[in-house]
Length: 227
Image (tube, rainbow, N blue to C red; front, top):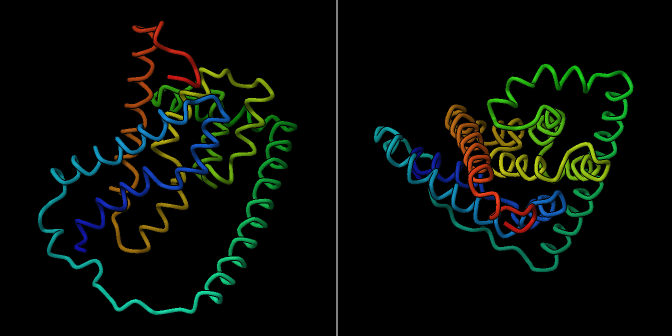
């Protein structure tokens, strides 16, 4: 791959990845699973088309990766390694969720969430999201959708966010989440931070505003969780 190819592929992967887990979270938070899948796949293809037009051809001259011979591994040792990795992941997720929910309780006790909501309120307005989404926006962009699932479901079940607003939040987060972790990962591989963040933020904002326009002009076609 050239650096140009890798940049396009990275943005596609950041938009549409971990579909089973993340779509399940989105569905539990009030969105249509089918719609979220098509939204993410469609956005990733659109990103590829746009970047193919915008990225300079000079990037194609920079080699990003070259083919290498695949290492052959025995089946059972490979399965054992996968099992250990899965157990570590489960423990990691459990700790992350516990820490996040504890942090939220502390933030609520000391009114820090109110402060963050006011601080990020102007950005939420730009994104077309309610101010109440500020804390969840921070969570999904620092630890990601999978790790933030517990706090997201808790917000909805506690009635702190309407289903319509939750669905809007999913429209944004489906396109743009894990800004910290994913950006660091791909930037470490040599891909430009600008192309990893700015297009996703712009697309996420556009998707939400398009959805808001659709709801205001075609109200009969909207029902949370189905369309």
